[in-house]
Image 1 (cartoon, rainbow, N blue to C red):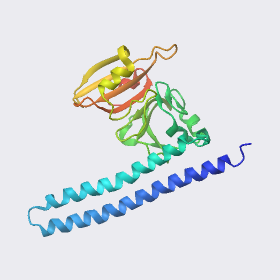
Image 2: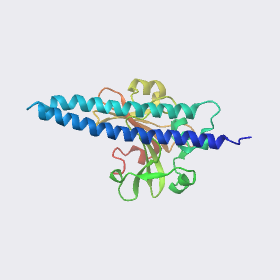
Image 3: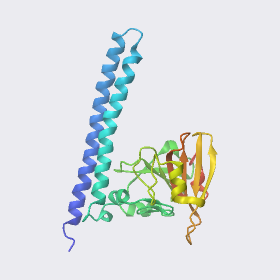
Image 4: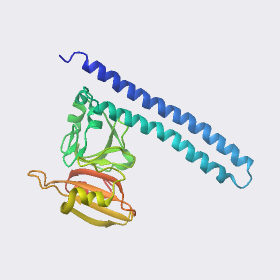
Length: 244
């Protein structure tokens, strides 16, 4: 019997969502107070205001991001807990899933936007990252910085952006090194210089039957660390500027 499972998961999801909303509201309130304090310090410190403002702004940012990161860790722990059927709540299913060449959990490369909505994933357009038939979306009530690129209403790529806790199936994440990439993917990698990040664009091509049209693409910085990565269908997954 599975009676009671969905209500329990629904409560967990509601708690996580409410907690996020509360943290965001608290962050906004803290920001208002922090800016007011910094402005007051600037006025009192003739000519040296920036020396007062920057530390306060930095402290404020840490104070807002730390609980947000903690919330995402808590959500991920719930999704991975024994006895929890994460598939019953789409956003938990995403948290429990690694990024693969073919997608992220219920988000399969090639799926339509309508099919995602039927699965209970509400999409929010990211207008500033979109152009023409190429559109970017984020997932409502999902705190991870992950974007979906859709062309003609079909998802062709999943982007994992800085700050995300999402990993690949092999454990690569934001902050992993180029050495980690070589250790995990070996001679299936190709790399080119990236003038924007001063690092490299590293592309993994799978050899599994039927997956040769997909890729994992990693962007590294001048320290050789992964700053963002993505999975999707070739060639759109290789577009450095996304839709733009």
